[in-house]
Image (cartoon, rainbow, N blue to C red; front, side, top):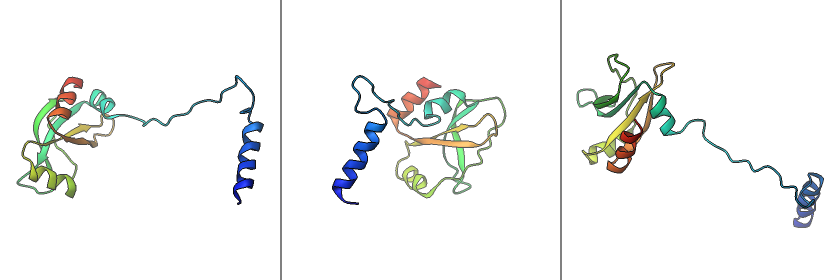
Amino acid sequence: MTETLRRSVYCSFGLANGAGESGHAGPVRTAYPEKSAADYLIESPTVVLAREDPQQPFSYTSVEVLKSSGDGIDIELLVDSVTRRRLAANEELVVVLAQDGKFGLWRNLGIADTDYLAVVRRIV
């Protein structure tokens, strides 16, 4: 498609949809994620800080429970290789995990440094 033809198609489409009329702005659409990390922290019955379990590589073990539904905490989520390397390189980092209340599935909400951890603690 040539540049001239492309411009005329865009102009025709815009005029047909009222873009050429003064005072009539079209709707502004912005994509939003279904849920944010804060939503998961608020809605989840169980939120923990975790690291890789030294007895079971690629498995998580909770280091601190921030919120719990009272049941025993069994984290059925694998530690991915990138997270595993970052945790091994820095003993102060932890992973924020939240459990879905409906299905009991765990969600990794990110590796937490001191700044992110402060925000997580405030939300929970």
